[in-house]
Image (cartoon, rainbow, N blue to C red; front, side, top):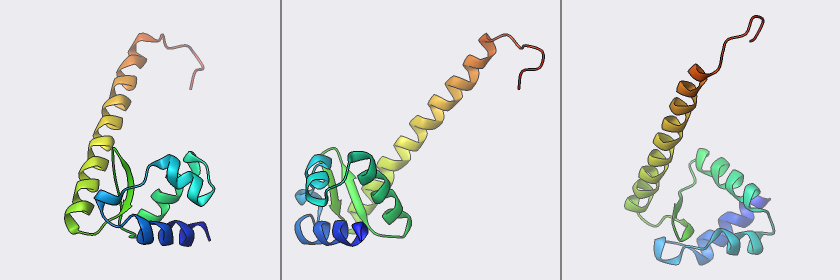
Length: 102
C-alpha cells in the first residue's frame, strides 16, 4: 500500500527533476520516516520503477536522461562506499592478531 501511495504522489506531483520533492516533504505526505522512505524507494527501484533523485529530493523520472543521471549518482555512492570499505580493511592491519580470534 505504501508503494502505491508513494508512486501516486510522485507521478501526480513530482514528475520530472524540476518538480522533485524533498525527503521531508515526502515523509510528511506519505506518513513514513526517512529510513522507511529510503528503503521504500530502494525496493521500488529494484522493481524497475524510475524514481530519480538529486540533491533537491526525489521525483518520478520523465526522461531517460533523468534516470541515467540518477544511475550515475548511485554509481558515485557505490564507489565511495567501496573506497570506505577498502580503507577499513587496510585499518585492520593495525590490530594485533590474537589467538582464537575470528
